[in-house]
Image (cartoon, rainbow, N blue to C red; front, side, top):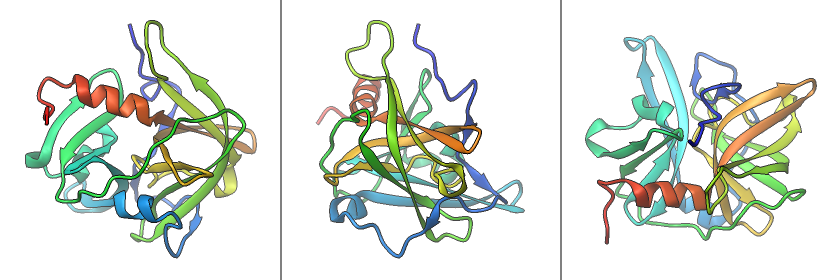
Length: 205
């Protein structure tokens, strides 16, 4: 049985009336990531709160984000959700897809997300652990460590994690603080693609 680590132990990265995480960013430095990045926002709680998150295009016309971002996605666009992982797939008019890679322990990464005011935010870290599940052929998820004062957090939910070569290696879904260190958790892109392909309603062409 696969377990979803975002259900237990972790704080989800959805922002609602929270302080923005990470640091301000004027732009996404990697052109392919910038083209595939989808900011998300909506009014929730009867319009009283603003919630923000992010998504990425994983195939032409197909976006991926966290299932806990469902309130930020038009229900008519949703293709499906994954029960064992905090993943949701939806249709988008955007068709730009970034080159992908795999996480490597000890390597520096960059994450992007949204501030509560809708501004772009950035955070940096170093991959610490890559976790596999029993019987899986691709990683379940990985984590990267940052100083918690400028780390990814609320608003980075569903946003891209990028390696030093500018490749999309994952999408964030949660975090856990350990003293002054924040561990940010992300699904590897191989996992994101595998779960999408397994959806019964996933487009086959």
